[in-house]
Image (cartoon, rainbow, N blue to C red; front, side, top):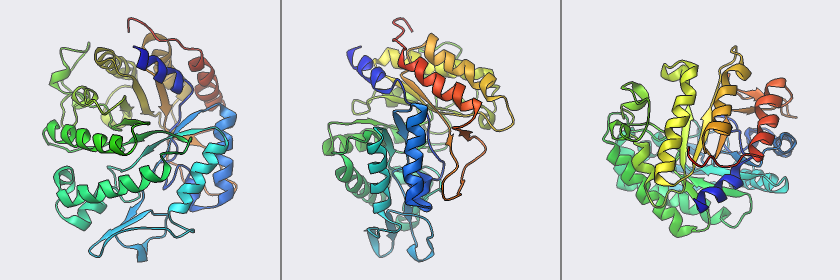
Length: 359
């Protein structure tokens, strides 16, 4: 359990994903440099040490692109965007801003969803459909080119905590072996470029019938059927994946919020069986619900009932100096009582946590 304890201590005070659809760790990449300075400062004041932040941004048509983007994929080829106004310089700036505040970043390199040019931008360029991405040779070559571009650019930065293969990869209706093979190949490639940082898959933690003998309270409902083509247990066993990721959106998936602690405990059990850390990487309570009453028991499960290494609420919200506020209805704002309890106090509690030896 030595590795687990190292990881636990490293992420004991990490919690919030940032902004869905953000082209850099800070949504301010689309607004101003002042925003990129203000946001890490807000993280720091709340006590966060590690933040999950987007490292992807792809377009198929730069002539119609108004957001920040880092690469272009189209019939003419693959190009990286070095424009200082809307290109990779914006990610440079955001990473430097995080470094100045002593914040480290988990950097996903691809998005399953269309925001900021996800998997479908590769399909648009190289053919096939969403599910074929994982086995499309040309798409995979392009993706590895992008991985090499980003990893080699930032692997020496003290602001990097870990690399992530994809935000919420899915292959709906596929055999889970497709994503497992892809995750094995891709994580090994990242390790060949940078053996000094951890790598995760970035999946939501979907379970399948193969998990039934490992966990308690297994049931045949959406999150347990393997429909999305992901087997958390098999993927966590991949040698070049260092820790497991779990997401939780009870309102979107058709569960009661009280199910959340069960979901957390089940993944904790799998992590313990495989001797690898597990991170509750995204969880959220929609606007209009009592967030403290709803998410508090989940945080208590992480803190007191399991050895889950850390948790990251979706999502940290702050009003930007430029006035932009591009958030969804899950945002928890840093100057509210919600964040004082679910954020700052939880940071202090997690910093004092010790691993639960039998759970």
